[in-house]
Image 1 (cartoon, rainbow, N blue to C red):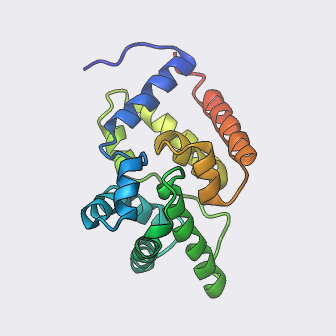
Image 2 (cartoon, one colour):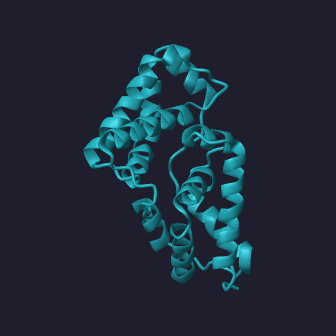
Amino acid sequence: MKLPVYSGMKFLMFYLLILLALRKENNKDNPELLLAIKSGDHKAFKLFFDVHHSYLYHFLLKKGLSEQQAEDLVQQAFVMIWEKREEIDEQKSLRAYLFRIAYTRMLNLFRDHSKFDENAETEATESDQKADANIENQELAEALTNAINQMPEKRQEVFRLCFIQEFTYKSAAEVLGVSVKTIENHMGLALKDLRNKLDGFR
């Protein structure tokens, strides 16, 4: 299938929508699912686990953890969710809470081992690379990937959470422990970066 010929930001937005469409996971919180988990439904919890395990695991790997460390923190985060299931508020994002647990424990681990490097650059995930390979306009795909990877780490992280993973600004703020205003600022700068980097595509 040939991609429509769009100019500038229209082409960018079309491509990003394709990335979203290629995702097979349903990352949005389902109030009924949260209520089922809260009531102790093992099947509901298994579904929640299956949906979010992989992305949380790779999220931690990109932050510099070993495979074993990442898997341990993922397991700890899910165990904590289950142990505190009766406290679940179906009006809030359980996904954001899950990520916040893992993120906080990751920071504690880095602090304890003095290995935290705030300047570490994150690489594109395997799923991103596979998605890029499926897009016929490879030049644009590579330019977009490079533009995202060249963003400062925090800006890139916010962009991936909010745009690629469809977190709300509030949920992303909860995960990263920053204000919603900070998330808004990062997203504004991220979109400006992309517009400048991809302005040559007509």
